[in-house]
Length: 162
View 1 (cartoon, rainbow, N blue to C red):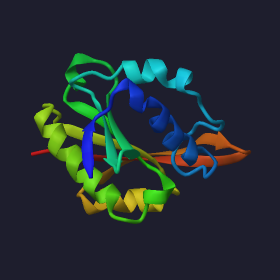
View 2 (cartoon, helix red, strand yellow):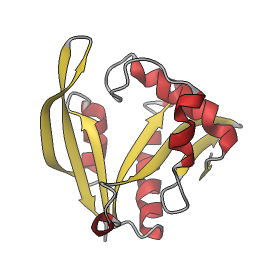
View 3 (cartoon, rainbow, N blue to C red):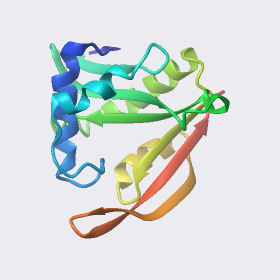
View 4 (cartoon, rainbow, N blue to C red):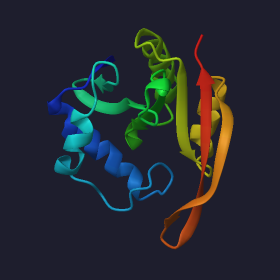
């Protein structure tokens, strides 16, 4: 088990894991698979202060997490959105808990004061995971996404790091 900074060679695995989540309509608002080229600029936008990490086992990337600056204004420098994606084969094994714990530890090292998670309101497993780590509901955006003719709401969870 290795959690390490992602590098450009990890991007195909990151994209493959991301694409796995699209059809289920639980995790992302993308409605069609994306390509490595589609995600290149996103990948390159990450920095030492806003990195991407991958979780690797036996040389295979099974999950990734990323930090994204919130709102792009200086006063929000300490506030960051976190995303965690796990391949379906590795779900239900406690990896989400391990990655969320790791993410919070790294956030403190990165001088992040507030973590946010934007989660579809019907994605109860993810909401419950974050709540186990003392994230609280800070807002709800009702029916802001339309996929396959269905409306979906977004829950915003947040946590102040000590």
